[in-house]
Image 1: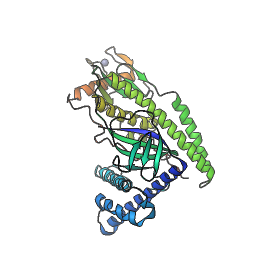
Image 2: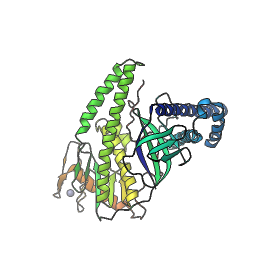
Image 3: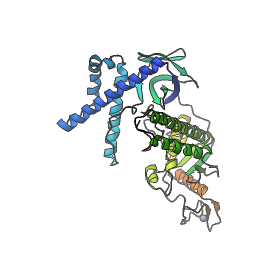
Image 4: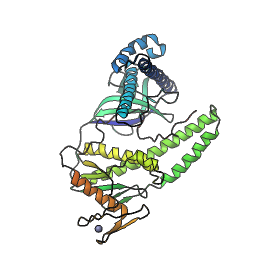
Length: 398
Ligand SMILES: [Zn+2]
């Protein structure tokens, strides 16, 4: 299985200039390829494929003085990324979802480039990362990397540089514990389990959100194009990064604790997009966190040999979880406590978690296949870190 390891890079002044230049060249190449596809389709109803554009990389390197210094694999990965964007666009169109056509990337909207073969264009040289044409970059190896390195992606995030290595590693199963759990996600708590365990939103969460609002306001009061606005934007980006890092850290710990304690985890399958539209539920503030937790649980389950099952949440909070009763009640969101004529009296979310566990266990066919694989083809190195919240306000005009 593939696992990715991300490390902070500390390029020298000259190196960061080269990195910026590479990004800019890639961005232009991306836009060129996108324009070619678009025009070919609009004018001649012809679709331009990935391989056709991959072949043009050599030509580009000959004709464009900027591209000459960029490793051809980097330019090929740009074509692959664009192709991926088109594939997911077509997939969404087919599924009848609202699909956005791949966009042209403006300045500051292109943040990463990749290399696809270890030893060809990049390699780990001593304690540094050697990139073709850029020399040896300083890396903060904050944790040991395992397995064999396959690809690397260099990305820029809030003015900092990172390298994500995709490594092929062995799966390491954990000892079975014989325990099962149901997990309910709530408005009042972050989550509640069938074992009567309730995890609240951490205390820093509200403070960090408040600070975000202040910084956002600062940006919108600065003049577009001014240097004060640029500074305000970078402060805002840093705050976004800080929040996303703290959230990820927290959720990883939650996922780890669930995976180590339970063999079987039944999760409420929330439909986030529908939920965000409902302002009364105000789950929108939880959406990014919930999606991330689901993904982390699924990925960790595959590695640890655990089972994660998604459960349709309808009626899980209304039904009585007593196995001999299962009566359906009508509850409003304000009812925090669940009481039934059968004598059951428990927290509303714990009742829901018990139901989720029950539904999960009855519907699971017990297949030996490791968990319901949520990420069929775990994209090892996506465009941006996929879990950074990108709301409509997540990007800024400088
Ligand atoms: Zn009952």
